[in-house]
Amino acid sequence: MRPVSYERARTVGQAARMSASAGAMPIAGGTNLLDLSKLEVETPSRLVDIRQIDALRGVRETTEGEVRIGALVSNAELAAHPVIRARYPLLSRAILAGASGQIRNMASTGGNLLQRTRCVQFYDTSSACNKRQPGSGCGALHGANRMNAIVGGSEHCIAVHPSDMAVAMRVLDAVVEIQGADGAVRHVPIGAFYRLPGDTPQNETVVRQGDIITAVLLPPAPPGQQFYRKVRDRASYAFALVSVGAVVAVEDGRFSTVRFGFGGIAPKPWRVEAAEASLKGRAVSREAVRDACDMALSGAIGRGDNDFKIPLAHHTLAAVLAV
Image (cartoon, rainbow, N blue to C red; front, side, top):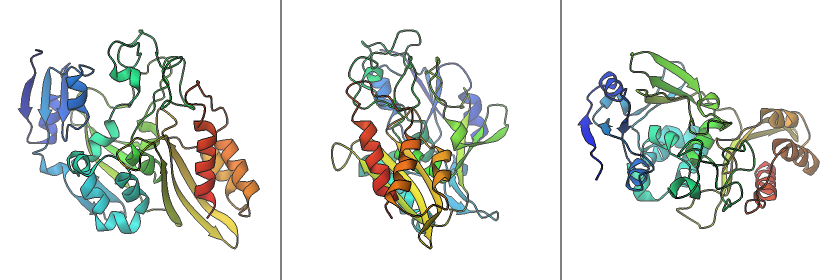
């Protein structure tokens, strides 16, 4: 049995300092970390429990017009919060499309953003996986890859990020607030929060050892209807094959505001602003939507089992944009 120490932090600064040493990891809901630890995919030597830190709780509106979501707010609490339901229904719907009720009660906002891929080879410690063991190879490239990426991957990794919440936050231009072990606080747009795998797929985000996610900030939502459509193998408790979050406004028969992002097809929430911009001012039509879908998925590559995701992503986005 591998020894693991457990400690509780009372402040963010204390949690960051405790988590700064090699092998230490903060834990909140633990819904992903405990599974990974049982499989020895993650092998922390020190767990720092952050659940007693009141500064990480609550959803509140700021004087700047943003909504501040504490990192410990549970997925269930966030989805049901009246401000989120009224102003960011896309986020509420995305959260409710993920996991089970029990997991949503435990899982935290910060932890959801940091959850690891569900790639089969990542969880199977007998398989090659550059994300789990750098330099060991990628068993998904020519193996079972039905759930894997069609865009954004590399020859070293084609895992996808599994979060529904992150897709909605990417479309809403959320900003992640992070405090480091030195006490410095930085704000990272979620578009820059996740890294593409390149030749270092083990580095998934900009979070460093000793960093604590303290909150997520949502700017005012753009005008328009908000959508989240998720295609999956089962009606509940299944990860996305393809998902699309979107905000769409139409004036006088023309697109005036369009934002959309994909889940389930890339190592991070996948958004192509050029494809969104191509629709602005165009008359709503099948041709306009088709052109935007083609642009959004240009360069998509199937690896065998996941070839179907290319037309599926195209059809899912087209269905969302057919407002």
